[in-house]
Length: 121
Length: 133
Length: 279
Image (cartoon, rainbow over all chains, first blue to last red; front, top):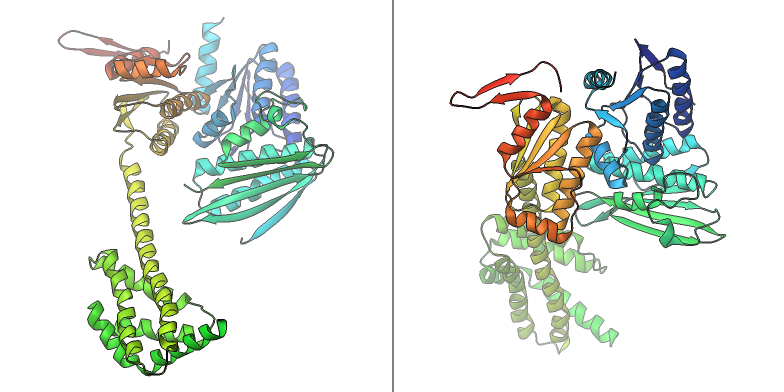
């Protein structure tokens, strides 16, 4: 099983998924992220899925779970870089990822996090 | 690749393997990027279903033709407990596995043809086809 | 019966071989086609019959070729079929002159049926060729009719014009989403002013696109909803939920400006103020 690395930039954690996700890797990522958020006292999490070719219901559920889990640990989550084909497929599948914030790319994701934090001091 | 291929689904690494193989065949028969993504996603759902609910199984991958159109046909078979109420299993939100319950109904919406045969105690066979546009 | 049929068939084959030159010449006259082409076809037919396996693959190949070249030369498909049917007339003249019993006449029925099949085959080939042209053109049309235009930095629009069917809506929507990725635009306007009617399927596609854009991190506004379209949508019971809809493209642009934090002050010399911060 491959593990997805978690990078720290200030008080933001960045996860860039570059592998074909196996279910175990997905579950491990959920745990690793929760640990890392607590350990670093992170205020934001960015999950970059630019390289992800498919998001099925399992991976979709992981994104939703991470968002609500991090929310409970007081960190905002933004999913960035979803491909058009992936978005269209998710809609057809019936997943709307309610509660997950999204941005077009990493840069806009960082800006969105800044914006959210300036709005809620 | 020509003809058929059969892959055993025995572990979660095999689900990834099925995805990759389906993707390569989908590219070969000239499906659009969106259609590739749809059939690969459906394959991922169905392979996981066979693994989680059927205790493992296999998938046969075939290239089919209909006039000038080419299609990709996937046949997932498991010998698990089967599905007692198919109508219910295809309903969104219905699950026994702790998932979101979008696997079967969702994959039906991602493909052009969907056929489910199941007999309690004997197993389940799901056949899906995606045609090139 | 089958013995009879066999004898009859052999007699026809014999006649076809013996009178080859005459038949081809007569056929060319009737069909008003170059005898070279017909001769090749005739030879292939003889060869196929000789093998006795009814394997007409070669003959069909040649016929398809003939059918295509005649279609290009402007012949109607019925002309081509008639040219093939001409062979029956040419052969019949030989059969009529045949003095050795009724075998040839009997065999002619079989032969006639064979030629009918081949004639119809040219029709099929013609229809197939046409179908391919139509498919190609439909594809070209799809590509032509999908402009995504940039209205402002970070704001793009798709002005939809004409009847929307599922395939076209899908292509337009894919292109819009792709443009969002390429340009990094966070606001999109789908303008349907030029669309005469919206049915359930098209409305579904529009909705799905808006949701897909949201998943990617962009907001879509649908504009140009004319009164009767609003009426249909409500009558069909389609839920637009929290999706923003505007009557005109101008309203949609104003909305996008507001969302993007761009301020426009009106008057004779309209001035656009862009604030550095997002609101």
